[in-house]
Image 1 (cartoon, rainbow, N blue to C red):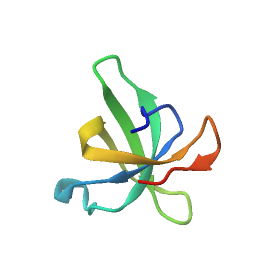
Image 2: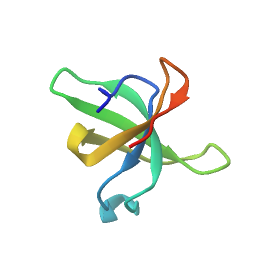
Image 3: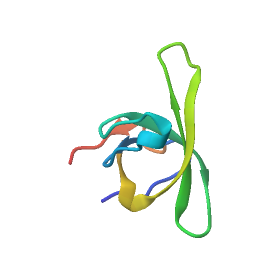
Length: 74
């Protein structure tokens, strides 16, 4: 498993009904905290922010690495 890093694209593994987000929705890591939590921004196709959530690494998987600019296979 790849360690999450700034600007990686991630996919939710859980539903977040309080933010109207379902499992499988993709977002971008916009902040990495020292406690292994990550601020993830979810946006629509127009680039408008739908939700900004603090998530633990267990709540998502990295699907695109910003460092290597490649998609990751599960």
